Length: 67
Image (cartoon, rainbow, N blue to C red; front, side, top):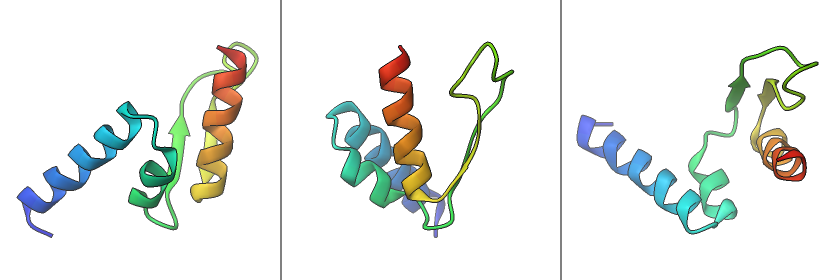
């Protein structure tokens, strides 16, 4: 991908997130995505590593419930 294509993908990712279109957001991610939220889990229960779109979706569901 060119730099401009990369920028377009990131812009589409942010736009999908802003409008609450999590299906489009997740579909923008690679199948083998690794989503890392650093921090101590006793303080930040949503911290940790998730692998794959399904686990990233679970992260957002858990995060929404706890915030």
